[in-house]
Length: 342
Image 1: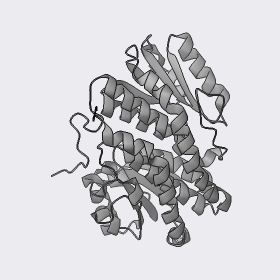
Image 2: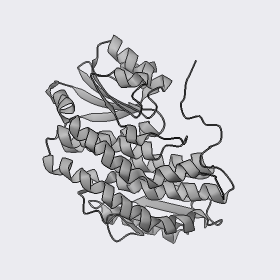
Image 3: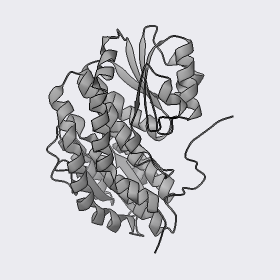
Image 4: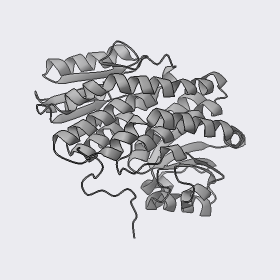
């Protein structure tokens, strides 16, 4: 039996159970999270490295949309190395996200933030015995997201779910907070439905360029999906905002191109127009959306909190592409599970 990617496959397929367990913990921690709403913050910053930076891009966009508070995302290295370009003069809530809780740049950014007394720190991680899990005023450890693989799949979506819960709680939106419970069963159904299509496309030797389109919060998800394709399959892969794809990047379309659109409901018409233009130029398409798409989420969950469902098909596509090339998704080239700098 082929053992390549055994851990990655298992971690992709068990995401819905991890989400359900994470939500149980988040409900128990609701009081701690709510306590942060009392802070008079001038800005909210989300930060991480690699996958968790892309997570932060999506999380900051949703947080601002739901809470009405200004929020943005920056790589932890920027906060650490160039803080004057990152922080305002007022009080900041820093939301630091790290699967391992040991990434050098994230720890350095948090240490400097605390030393300089810039505000309050909230951490999301997956391992209780790692240093990040004790640095914050509030520390949320979602152990169900733990992984043996190097490329993040289950950890990413579980941690991202934590930030969606934070946004719903911060907005005092009990309906959306409660609706998060519907994501796990929706995800289980989705994984079953999308696996055959992901295998078909991932195993297709005619495809060697992958462009991921997503706007608003879905841009961060498109960036993460592109990273998964690079890490697992060493393929040419790039993310773009939907309409930005017209401004130069469409020149890279060839008959071997797959354009994957993380389509929204609110802006479906202009996004679909970009996809049709790419198809007319020779690209193949894969659309992911709540309905009327190649991969229909069919969640019945409000658009503001269903973003996590866009990831499984992307992860499976990267996984299958890796196997087709004779690679091992569990062991990406040149990568380690934790980046530690001397």
